[in-house]
Image (cartoon, rainbow, N blue to C red; front, top):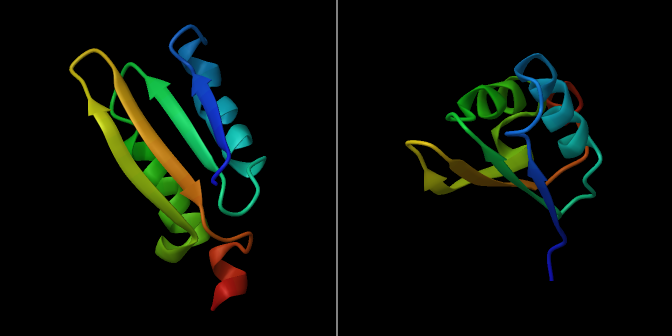
Length: 86
């Protein structure tokens, strides 16, 4: 069974959200999932992970897509950054 870490950043100051989200993701073990709740589309996280980890290192699944609440599951599939996977 996959471990799920829940993070709701809606009450967090906008300037601190991205760091909080990425810290939570980096703290996941392989095959664990971050369930993220935000008040906007978290596509910047998707693009950051794709650029820094590679498309095969994670799975990004929308559970709820606005207009006021977005929820996604981000499953960590690999520990290695994209540069180490090549």
